[in-house]
Length: 243
Image (cartoon, rainbow, N blue to C red):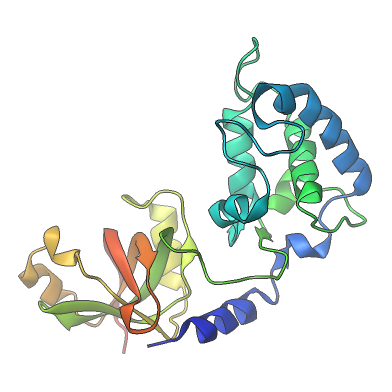
């Protein structure tokens, strides 16, 4: 079973050629515009000038990053641009798209991510990972993930072997054609996970028929080393025998 340390190394290697927020993905001028928009629409209503929030969670510190890191900026942008701001006669999602982009640039600046030479755009967000200031790290406990691997084990202990690195997801109890297509083409890896609850929703005979097949598992990930496990909420075959 892979250790947490080696998983962190694998995560770093996998992300070496992926653009991250450490690469300077916004400009100082854009963050300044975002600061103005934030004070106009976000500060007094919910989050405060210090981004500490009241009832909403903070928009900085490890608490904030653990919710959103190891995911693309587009996910955070979608959340902000469809749910904010709240109250005072302004409908959620009503601001101009550029204001939301600039506000996200300001949030990155407040979190001490470096500025760069190009402004952040919506297109950029789909290929830019939000990571911590120390770079990519293993996902935090209870992260919702999608993992692809080889189905193995028996009714005493079902397992996922030769598994890919977990990809963060926001919906774990269902999947779609596009996601399944990505999983079908995703390369296998070297991780392994216990699938402790799989028999709650699937008959043993059905599971035996899927042994050695390439599968997509979505659920809540916890544990490390021999206790690495996923509480499964979606289980789909995406290929024939792993070979």
